[in-house]
Length: 237
Figure 1 (cartoon, rainbow, N blue to C red):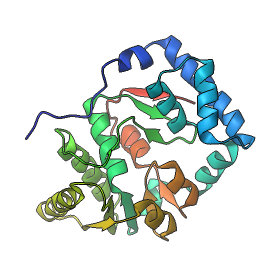
Figure 2 (figure 1 turned 180 degrees about the horizontal axis):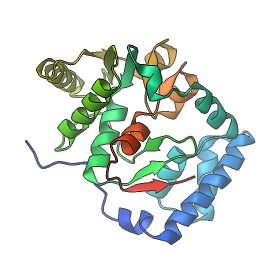
Figure 3 (figure 1 turned 90 degrees about the vertical axis):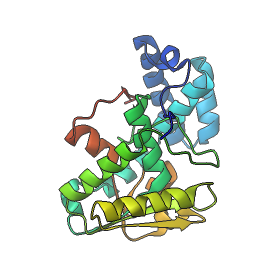
């Protein structure tokens, strides 16, 4: 095993640790929600709000992830399921989105709760996925959720164009066999579109998928609350 993790970037404490910075982020989310609700484009809204508070690029990234229009927030809430709705159901999981977010959470990186109640981080795949020290902890957490809520089947969906996607797919399948879990793993060239068009329950915190899917479950929120996880959490509400 290697020594990689998905912890904080150098300088993240300066950007996110103080009450002053958190207060500015919360104000910026309100400003951006106002703009988005009135039809302003996301990128322009983030730049406008970010410039007002003199944010650095990672603060703007957090702001974009946490913000949504009133219509988006309402739409996502209407489609959100509770844990009790999952028993004996098939669930499709946005592989890299969920795995990297959980790896970041277990690494002590900053996790942001957005206006839609979803949780997001500042990590990304950037064309290549690299397994880290927290990968197995992330998979254990999903397995615990799977068993506790008696899901029928869980299907992990990964981006085929991402380097090492085949390896992580095999890791998931091996883990499922070892732990007697009814899991599958698939590679898709356009996983966002695949998940958005699926009639199954979706697990993701990707904004576009949440806007377009039929029904979804907030796994990260569930795990934080149900398992009382230790999280470096910033609530942007």
